[in-house]
Length: 287
Image (cartoon, rainbow, N blue to C red):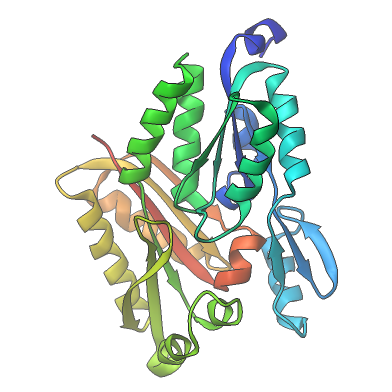
């Protein structure tokens, strides 16, 4: 994009690494990503700097579960300064405030920029967040104003739904996201547990299925409920160390619905810290 064209942008779009958007896609859509970080076996790394395989090898051998950290206020301030050099305003869209302090750090940084930075709580994560970010990027390319884009984002936030299936609740329990009793139930009888992110942006249990086939059948039933009468939609299927399973889910989706967009992606280390091996599907029915 030429400098003159970039300078005409009404707003820039910024998100964080929990959106699981690849650097290539972010570059193509003019999206700036502020990364979270994780500490594993005493070493702190930026999200996205370690492959999934490397991360799980390290996590399995580490004596303690990795910890994750939101971006600093300073990191957001630097990103906003860069963005405002080529855009009149910024829309900064982030992981649910019920799951991370990232939104709060972004809001504190935004206070330094008067009314030019607008922080939006996606009330979601991974590609439940990413679809919203991509919608904002499309609004920017289409020349919409900030308020129009924020209104569209509010609608997208209500429409995009995410289901997460975990092979074990142990990481969620150790990370303090759920209680010990729920973890015990999830470990019994080969139960696979499915979760969603509710309207407030917090994890909410959906069901427990005995074995992987039953869990994936449940996942498809849940997707069907979210689709309602819509015959086409956008879908994103994520995984952590389970790519073959993700492609099976994607194939099932393509057999049942018309796909206006379909992404199969890897969950990053920050997400995987809390979920362990996992699958997830973000659904956005076409209107």
